Image (cartoon, rainbow, N blue to C red; front, side, top):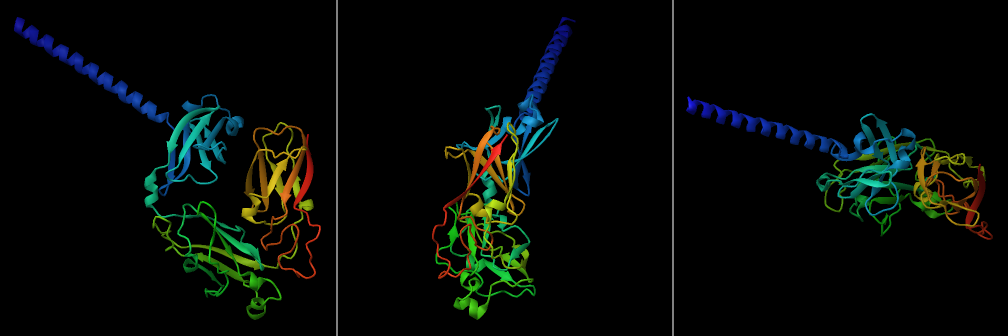
Length: 372
């Protein structure tokens, strides 16, 4: 009897230990799952990191009206906040950046000034092919005397080979010859991700032999397809994998310089985080828009802002660093800014250089406005 009792006692002890182990495992995995649920996660589409999800547990107390002020994403090591769209609900916030996350890069998520997540975009995305993020100008109707096109790639591309992969087709699908300017050195940005493509200026400028012999590269009323072959590879040898194209129609020539005095300014109220919006009344050069317009104070000092090009490059949104203080401001525009035909604020691209003498031309155009 004593032996049976002892065996029963041992079995109860073992059962008690087993139950405790099961309970401990449940607590461990429950905590583990909770921990994972409270981490910032990467949202992927077709293998690309396109957004971040920040669970509500990490941003307790965040109000929708304060979202862009209190919740920010930065590239590690940089002071500027990433621009993007925020979508908030009870489960948390989805942040979709204006410019897609770069594979292999490191980012920080901050809430109320404190880092709540350090994360990296997986390097294994580099095994996939690059993509073309944007083709500029983005409008589908462009002037007959269009001067430049821009290609923005997701990764640094092989250079010196663009002639093999770029074509312009007419409405019949025939390839147009000698339409692009053939440069010995291609025009890439410092990162090797953006290429500037010039249409042959000799065919655009009247009075020059190429224009007299071959005419303008584009013709008013005709439709075209700008095509990029999928065989183009990045610096690691990964190909685009598919062809990209942009279809557009040529409209009448643009032979008027941009007029900053006619730009429509939508001025925010003092204390507002809303942007200063500028409507140019026409599409302007995408790349030049990014580095020719600044805001200055009455002392001539530049004001820190964020700028977003919108509406087929017809508009610019200028966001304050925090909120707009009341006072006087000056919109300072470098006169190098061009429209799509290469006409800048001082002169037309297609002009008679013998009669259009560049005397007394201003380097900057400054326009005053007041925030009340």
